[in-house]
Length: 173
Image (tube, helix red, strand yellow):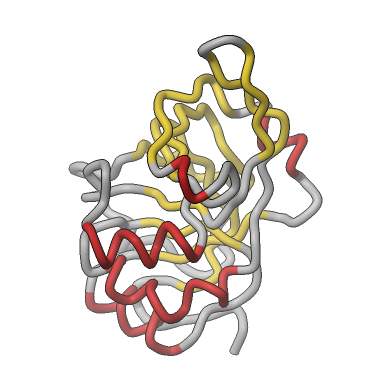
């Protein structure tokens, strides 16, 4: 059974989620790849990331006039964020979305900050884009379209599988 979670996480908790649980997200998610993670640590986040869901993704987006249109959005390999993720999690996000595993520094950060790492299925970029209702904003476009932070309003974004929970369990073990 899929668990529906509203983001950003306010009064809800992800502590009851365990590896193998299937979830979907409604609210706002932020995309961030390695260059955005690095800049978050250097300059601070351009948006409030307390309770946020951060998606390791480089979306394909077209610009139509002053508006942006999402074409596809799929996960990128999360291990590239290992050098930055622990410190970013300490800044307050509760859900990290990506592909593949993450290291023990991330596992420890998930435990210490009651957060989870969930995986999005590679190859489902067209499916996930259907859950994006609106691109609310973009920050750090100077990093390039895939590396920018995209603030996406989503509804029933998923399915996502809990791969590392807040108790230290990992599907990769």
